[in-house]
Image (cartoon, rainbow, N blue to C red; front, top):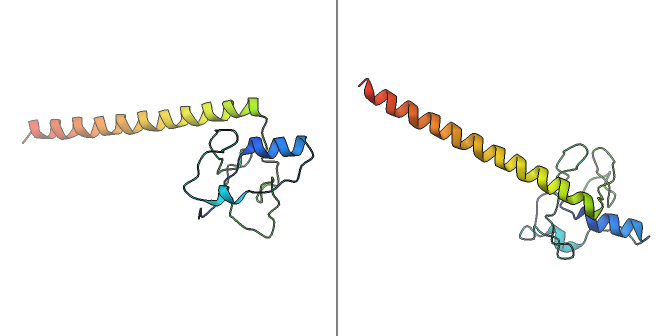
Length: 116
C-alpha cells in the first residue's frame, strides 16, 4: 500500500464533468501502480495548488479535493501535458545540478592531488 494519496486528475475531472460520483479507486492506493490505467498518465502525489503530499485518510478528506488547501484536484486532459512538461523540466534540472556537483567534486579531487 502507498503511504500517501495518489490520484488521476483527469479521472476526477471527467467524473465531475459527467456528473458521476467522485471516488478514489483502490488501485490508486497500490504502491506499484504509478500510471492511470484509463488515461496512461502518471498518478499525481502532490496537490497542484499547494504542493502538499496528501495523507491516505484525514478528517478533512473529500474525494477529489486537497485535504490541506481544499482545492479541486481534477485537471482537464489537455492541461495534464503542462504538468508533465513541468515535472520533466524539474527532473532534468535536478539531474543537471547533480552532474555539475559531481563534476566539481571530481575536479576538486584531482586538483588536490597536484599539491600532494
